[in-house]
Length: 205
Image (cartoon, rainbow, N blue to C red; front, top):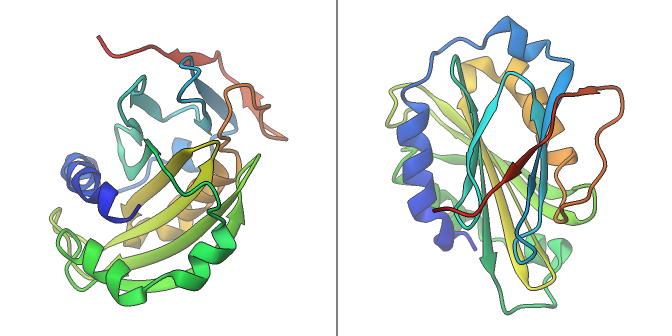
């Protein structure tokens, strides 16, 4: 699934390069959230994120969540997979550190893999790893948090990128988005947050 995301990585970093280099205080302190659900029965998911962030794409296309004034962006891609026996634990055991580093180094030169393990979504267990680079195509050090899982013959990849200098504010937001992600469209919301009006992603025209 790593190689299937190479094109999306280029798009993500190019878009991230247009953002401000300082996280907006309102984003870091956000208590209200948005909920975006896919309306396609063949591509179900629920994504929950701070109200200050906006979603674009969706339907049959990747979903991108970012903030117009913050160097933080998450991209969700859903692809068909044939390995119905996939598990996060097995994927972690088979993870090739050198292959992961090479897959990111083109857009994040000097990429170094950090922590790796498994983490829960709302309804599934995902492989997770993070890594950072001292330089990037946007001219600042970047950190990526990558998660992936397989559910009902579909592979879900959720990648979040942020400026490494803003990790103290950005990483808790990323962790929140990951923990509240679901591979179904009817997932409930998080605890301790006010829910803004829900959005449904329509099929691309």
